[in-house]
Image (cartoon, rainbow, N blue to C red; front, top):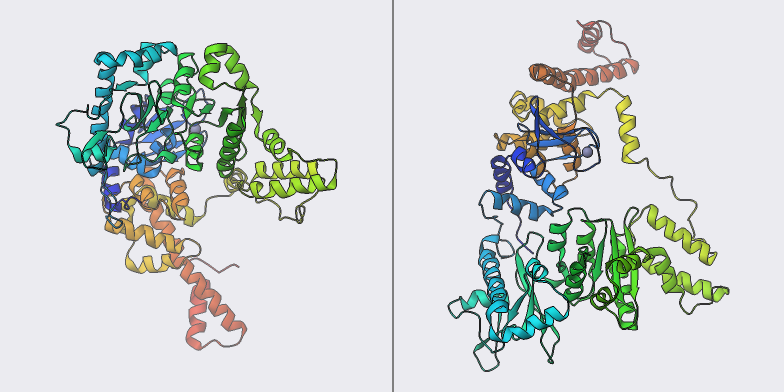
Length: 580
Ligand SMILES: [Zn+2]
């Protein structure tokens, strides 16, 4: 949808951002030699092994191996997507994200007035709740629900008065329409979208208001009304209350997914701040993916009636692509006639938490739901179960979790999937590979590449003849060429800039690892070591290649006199006799 962010803009951002300040604002850093250190935010530890290097603009954890640039840090720590991280960095610097306008998508610059007007509207509605004569119905409604002033303030609850136009007439109409705050009448004229409703601002992860939800006061339809979708509001991508939740708890152990705004607010009123709501639509795959960025456990909380259970199953289906080992999806069916709002008011926090604790696990709910109405004692029943379960299981990502669900299906049905036992053995995990690597001394190629990535200015020692030889190396010759070409065209690139230039390519992980890897080469010896490895990879390798070719020809009796001399020179040259 949005245009691509140009490479040069990202380089510029990284050059202007200081990673040390960026991290220090979140986790206080201490100076240690030429680095800055703190306790790692990505694993639990007592002594600091998280190290930030100002010159490289790169961080590395000696405990868990986490590493990256400012963009990577925001993605992992603030759990932003790549474009969001770029936007956040640009915001810090007071810049507007530039996009290549291929698809004619709006830039952040043109969206800014929408965010600003939504904020103004929110303040306007909050003010109306306090001062409008008709607001007493709204206040009564909230009081009746047990909502305190403090909670109303935290969720910035407001009131849209009755009447067709209350929003200030001097606000620009086009921006009001862009925000979905006014709609058009059939016969011309404009009216406020929200009238005589309690309004709940919907905030994105950065706290910006992207839309509103409104509940009618008294009788009227619809009972709940959301802002229409706009350039800044897509219902399936937002969840209500996530910003407020993360303000209250940075790392929630679980997130409870409910159906309504008032459920979220009532739960918060009773001290259960871990709830979010979908926006009147079925729970989407995007929403589940978003929530799993902040927690490993989601509890889906739906009405116990048929409609509620259908919604829960739909949510399960949307969640399947995101489920894997370490992620938990649980199901809580509410007693008949209750929603979380009414239930927590009746039972209180402790009892509600108990219900959450006893919520059904995924496997239990999944097979329970699928087995409904099946006689599993019969072959017919068991084969129906397999038939029902297969399409859903196929949506699970490959991995241990999926294998265990498949295994459970086999147990329940007594049916083994064909080919289940003759799959190729699993490849060793990353950890095992790394351990195996740790035993070997680093190759010349690896040290060469790491030095180049960590000290981009070394690129000036690579002339075109050497570059041509390096580019032929297997593996990574092509990668060397790409790195050199990038550094030649970006002479001031930092390590982080270089790494980010490769984001989204196959080489990204390799380069990020090289940037973080400790070469054990002292700064004073960088140039010398780099030159030695380059010679080894170019001249020496070429010599070796030529030698092999000559030996081959000698074995076939094809040597010319000149070649015989060359072979003698190569094998008895200043490096001494050649040994295989
Ligand atoms: Zn760590």
